[in-house]
Image (cartoon, rainbow, N blue to C red; front, side, top):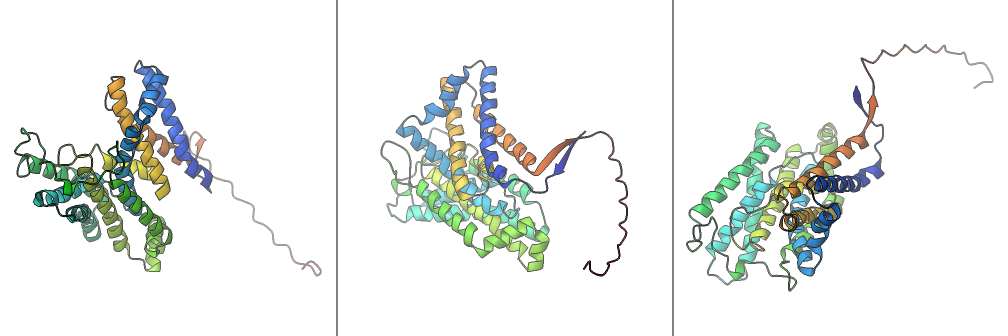
Length: 373
């Protein structure tokens, strides 16, 4: 029988090396998958990991996809550190995009420079509003924020579908489920000529710096961390558990809403279906691969973005299904969880019930003689 025995002191070195080990195992198994699909592993590896970023345009696309992943993961990491599990970032991204898109359509004929800032504010508030629902239900009725935030993803997608099929549908869009193309005042400026890299990258970098400072030096972040590691100690110290839940969920909602705004004001330029290729869910993997650390999240987001680009490249060049990108994401998460288990637990083999330990003989007290003290 296989038993998992907790390790007295998990290795801190392996805690940081395990993501690299998970990436290596993902690549090995990925090559096996390519072989089973009848592809040359080296050719498939080149098409998946090298071809998408072999020019300036490809590097710009890498940053475009990494930006929303990193931004959402940064927001989620604030709550995850306090064991506040926001699984509905995809829905918060959608609602943030809807709120920002409503501003863009309302000021469609305006050339004011205030349209874009208003969109960013509306997007953050839209994501926060959607995250406030599981926060309220958790603090008021002790419901599971995991289930509530996850179910709200599908509600948000239905709201988007109703809008682009109904009141916000483009009258000149030949019946496609999409809004009108936004005006230039509602679009993020391009940063690098010859690419689609836009100013949303700067928003992500600012969020990274703010999150780093907050997690490292903020008293609130320390209290949230204590609440996540030792809830009883946090209660004894007088830390506010409800405030921890609200901050954790609202931070994730604001980040996801900004990511949704960056998407519709950047490469998409309108509200449409689908709005996101699953950034809200993939960002959960990014957060844990990055060890809930802002720098680690930045590096993990680049890897996850490469998996998205690689899946598209493999689909076009090797005629592989689009789901191959999801296969690599699943492998990465699986091996990360597996290595984490081995870091915290030791595998032992044994059969039957353990025998009761023999009683230890009681020590006989030896009288202390003079001169022995």
